[in-house]
Length: 98
Image (cartoon, rainbow, N blue to C red; front, side, top):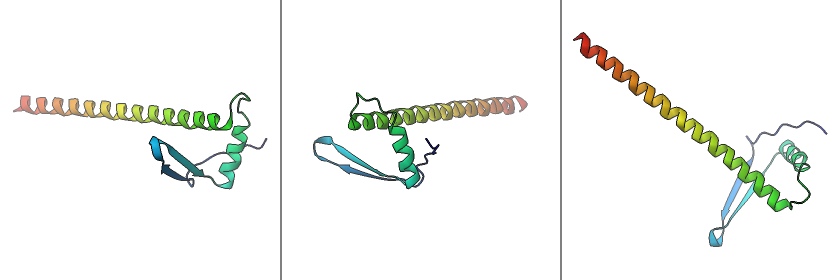
């Protein structure tokens, strides 16, 4: 099996709102991305149908991205707290110097 890297930089996503809260997502991949996805799909467990497998891949990706975003937000909040503490220390030093 050839090793193919997958990059979604040029992928196009189309999201269509449907009735009853349903949604259809269509993803257009380049030739290389499609080849990589086909190779990945060869790992599908035989007991899963294609639709279930694709949904699991999609939601697993969403969960990973959510975790990454949460980690970035926490890091940003921690940096803001540190910055605020440093400013408080500088203000205290300036008041003591006066």
